[in-house]
Image 1 (tube, rainbow over the protein chains, first blue to last red):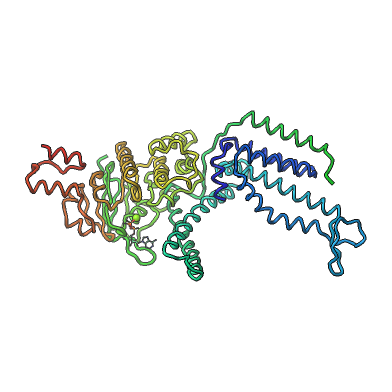
Image 2 (image 1 turned 90 degrees about the horizontal axis):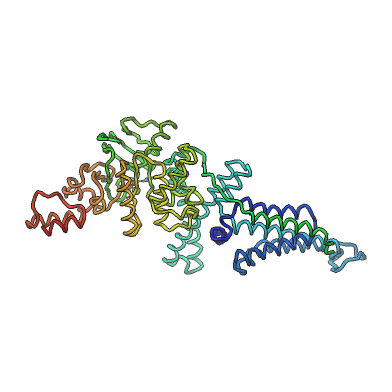
Length: 258
Length: 277
Ligand SMILES: Nc1ncnc2c1ncn2[C@@H]1O[C@H](COP(=O)(O)OP(=O)(O)OP(=O)(O)O)[C@@H](O)[C@H]1O
Ligand SMILES: [Mg+2]
C-alpha cells in the first residue's frame, strides 16, 4: 500500500492526464469483457507487464510480489474450476478416482480455468498500472468527473489520509514499546500488542476530535471542496492508446488456444 | 486601528472531565499587534484559542470580536472563523487533504471564493511559507517542518485579520523556528494581528510587542513585553524564567555598564551595541 503510493508519486506518468491513464485501463478491461479470447488477456498481461517493468521501471521483485497477492486466491480458485466430477468413461484429460466419485480435468473445464486465470491477471495488471501511475488526488478527480456522489469521493479521500495517520501512530507506539523491551518475549509481545490496539483507538479518537476542530476553524461546513485541477492531454499518449486499441481488435482474428 | 480586536470578559471553561482550564479570564487584545500568550504546559493557552475561535464555548463569560459579541449560530461562526485563523499545535491534525495544494485551497474554497482568487491565494501562501515546488506533494510525505509550513500556509491563504499560531515553533529546529517567526513578523507588518502561544520567554521577548501571561487558566499579567518581563514575581508565579537577554541587560545595568535611560534590547545585536557604547 505504502510502496504503491510512493511509486504513484514518483512515476514517470504522474503528470499525465488522469483521463488518459484511465482510458488506457478501461480500454484493456473493455476489450476483455467484449471478446472471450485467451490471446487478448495474455496480450494485455504482457503489455502491462512490459510497461510496468520497462517503462515505469518498477523493480521486478516488487511487481512479482504484487502479482502474487491476487494469485494466492486465483490459483486455488482456478484449480477448483478445472477439477470437476465427471462420469468415469467421459473423455477427460486427467482422472482421479475419489471414493464413489471421479474427479477429472476435462477439455472444457481446463479451458475455462485458464481463461479465468488469464482474464483475472489481465485485470489485475491493468489496475496495477493505474495505481502505480495515478496519485490519489488524481483518482479523486476521476471519481468526481465520473459523477460519483461527492460524499463517496470525500470519504475515500479522508480514508486515504487516515490510513497514513493511523499507520504513523501505530508505528510510533510500536517503536516506543520496543525500546522498552515490549516485544522481547512471547508474553511481552502479546501484552504490547493489546495495549497497542487500545492506544491506537484512543489516540485515533483524540486525533479525529482535534482534526475536526481544525477543519471547523477553517470554515468547514460539511463539504470538502477541492481545487479544480487542469491536466493537459498529450497527442502522443492518445496515439499510443489508439494503437493499442487497434492491436487488441486485430487480435480477435487469432483462433482460441483450446 | 488603535482599538481592541478581541476582548474576553470573565470566561470560564471546564472540560467534561471537570478540569477547569480557564477561570474568570478577562483580556483585551489590541488590533494589529504582535502578541504572545505565555504560559507553562497546561496553563490553558490552547483552550483559550479554541474559545476565541468558537470551537469551544465557555460556560460563563463573554467574548467580543471586533466589538461584536460572539454568537454561536452557523452564520456568525462562519464569519468569525473567516477572520480569525488558527494554526494548530500539531500539524498532523490539521492536514487532511491528499496533497499540499488541495490542503491550502481548502480554506479559501470554504470561503466561497472564485477559482482564480483561490489559486492566487494558494500560490501566495505557498510562496510566503517557502513551499513552492511542493504543490503536488502528498501531505504524508512531507517532513515535520514542511508539515508545519503547510499548516501555516493553509491558514494564511484565508487571509484572516487575526492569525493565531499555537506553539508555532514547537519541535522545529532553530533555523526553521527562526523562519516561522520571521514569517509571522512579515504578516504582522501587513496589518494582521498575530498571536502566538509559547513557553519560550526568550522567543516571546525578542518577537512580541504585547505579552499575556497565563498560569493555571488565570491571567497573571498583561502588557508591553518589557513591563511584564521585568516583573520577576509574575514570571515565577507562571513557572517561567526571565529571558536571558533581559537578565544580562539588568546585570549590566546594576554594574553601571549601561546608562539607565535606554530601553531593554530585544536582540543580541542591540545588546552588543549597548555594551560597545
Ligand atoms: N480534551 C480535554 N479534556 C480534558 N481536559 C483537557 C482537555 N484538553 C486540555 N485539558 C486540560 O486543560 C488544561 C489546559 O490545557 P491546554 O491544552 O489549554 O493547555 P496549554 O497551555 O495549551 O498547554 P501546552 O503548553 O501543553 O500545550 C490542562 O490541565 C489540560 O490537562
Ligand atoms: Mg497547547
